[in-house]
Length: 479
Ligand code: GDG
Image (cartoon, rainbow, N blue to C red; front, top):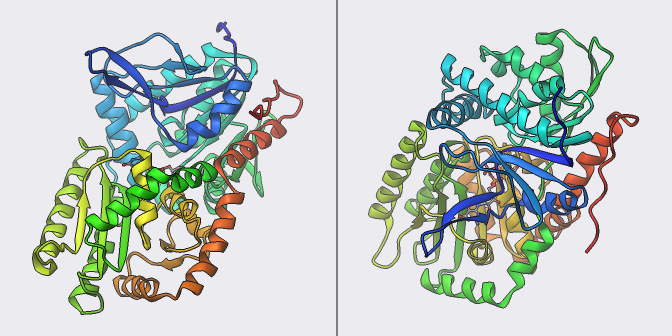
């Protein structure tokens, strides 16, 4: 019999919402890592004696649970081998490329799978210990797909939700996975499985019918034991008001002005902001921009492309190759097309505080978001939230989940360089009236559907899936 804990709401995610940092006096401290998920869940966590289970981000330590700023945090340690096999291996070398249209080739290794099973088990056991009787547990993302089933076996009294932040692939691709059935069964441990888009939920339902043989009807799976599992779309969003407030602050406004001057006060600034990831389509977007200069449609005196690529998964081979490819491309473009003090591309491989991101969004006349495949893409929504003057243009890939909602963007196919060139040029020459018409509509969507609404609707739906079962999550208290 597993001991039960006191948390009425438990979040299980690969990472804790804090980072270990070394202070100036050499002591190790926790720093809250800002992110939409944390800020959306914080109020509801406080109202429900919430606990967050996750990996602290470095090897070996098994730290005691602790309270940070009113939130109970439960660290799960990973060994160096587990980081290599569970995290860099199965999560980021197998599932990530497989779930993103095999943009890169997924690798299948049995040792990686075994590590994935072992780590998911550890997370499920921790969740079983901290959850109170009848509590709600919300499991996050592709690193944790076996947790719902493992947890249900340990604690059938719980109400369990799962949310996938990345795309869920069509059956034709998912089928490649040697452990396809185990992953589907893992997810079916949840009462509600949430996806970014309706198409992903349908892919899941179809696979469950074909591969596991359960009866399904529309968005429901009927299990032999009488339990039902619902699969539905909950498109994630951002703290839109928080971003807008930041963008309106005098410090950010001043910084945006300084950035533009430092760039040589060009007529128009193009901007890309991404984790340095092969799914994000950084390469074709820079090529499209460079060709516009080479062809004489744009001039480096008038236009500059600022690309921020945040370091990511640097120990994974494909990410190292990508970094070299982008370095080489930027070097070649600037070598061929730049003039003294006027590079065509201003490239930063670095991460910045939130204020600097807001200042960059304020500086950018044309935001370019061109992933080959993306679950949602929050950068596109953050840009829109910061454009309170109703100006600025968004060029957005059709293959980002965000394209489903942000219809008034200039939508592009990142595989079609000529199409992208035409859209970049159109956005560059767009009249203020056209920009304002589009941006107003985009802003309405982003402001009305923020991340608090996303979390609230998922939790409400989860509570409704088994109304007579378990405790009901209390809504966040308004401050
Ligand atoms: C996954 C899915 C889905 C980036 N650089 C810096 C920085 N960022 C912030 C951005 C944005 C976030 O990171 C990136 O979110 P995205 O949605 O663009 O992409 P992924 O990291 O791939 O996220 C994605 C998301 O999960 C949520 O479900 O939308 O599809 O792949 O918020 O602003 N933030 C700071 N400095 C940086 O240098 N402070």
